Length: 609
Image 1 (tube, rainbow, N blue to C red):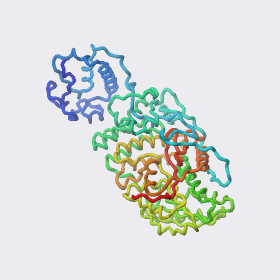
Image 2: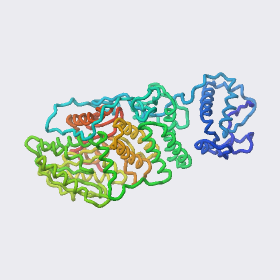
Image 3: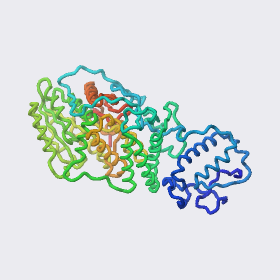
Image 4: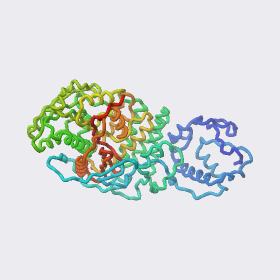
């Protein structure tokens, strides 16, 4: 090989002459015809011919070449300057051999193993965090005020935690995904992916490394993270994350040819993984494929509400919905203290699972229960049945058992934005105290311009004693697709990991389908069809304060109820609850997942919308 000052100039793979002096414009490589078969499809899309059998050799040579060039000083190539030689990188394996041969006389470091280089990709969702404390975990940012309540003495008047069939044996607290078995528990510790960047790193958006920033580049490892052990499926795990992020970036840039090739690779790489990572990657791959091929998510079958059925299983499998119901109920119970007639307006009636516990607590109230009125709001049934009426009948029978005076009314609405205060039959506040409750409903309004402002205006007209809100603690509403994809990949990886200790039950499988439908909506849909627009507590706080509400801090009893709920699932291991400026957050290890907050009308004037 001849030496030259412009030694590293590349030529067009489609050029007829390898000695042409014209450099190739960036991004203009031409794909050559496959003359040997067995070519790697993904690299072929990018214009490189590499046989699948050569992949391991090519990867090792790239490592060697990069390390050699990195050790060359600024004047280290001065002896190469004689005349120009051009190379054709389309034949990537041959080109690497030529480069390594030319650099061989230079001082070189020891050859590094494939995949053993440092990594700066944020793969924290591939591992479990160290902390598993129930009473206090660092969900918040360092400058946020956070405290843990002392557990008060129990009372018959407090809400009771209902176990249902959701008590599971305590699982071993593993720190990493076990890639050598079908679950994340047990197995050979030397065959676990140990690439971790703590949540506190990527939680700060100003300094956080983004996964998409390092796709296709050399990666560097933070000094505070553990070493990478790459053995078979672990290496595929890193490649899987790269492929997911690269595919999302290609979708954002509307490079559908590359995105299509990448999504095929994702499916193949996901098979090599075990446990939660395999499942969550499969759901994200399906969602990306639907977006690439413009396939709408499947609709629920007529005459059957699949979403309600899946939510029932989710309720039994993990503590998230129980936590939401019990913490909100405790806040409502305390707001109704001393009231003779109370009225709850439920924006998220579903199957009415939240209200038996509150009814029982009201029945045990000193001095006897108040008259309890419930207005349940829900969407129309697919088969036009009056399911809200059936729910009311069941609750009425329960009220008779508890000796609670009960009044019920069900209202069907396509959207909460269609609701008017006049249809709620409100009574004077001196006669009846009102609470408004919303569990996983408000984020759906963000798909419709002006809807959330209208609904909060209706709540102001109701003048409730308290307004309880439960929402997912994440930001899946970014206008940039890649940002939304990255955040949702972190969030749902943690969610799926928290389900791994449940065991192979039907509830677990249905719960995963429940979360998979959310993933599909976040990734595959846009416009009014994308209803899973989750936002963080900080974002909701801004919305509520602008609408004329101020925080109503949740008390120590609510914290106590949350801790009781967690003890019913996985022995309480892995789940944690934290009080954050009057709100309660439930998370898995160091990642907060859902937040319960309570609000009341602010004393001052309402700010303009």
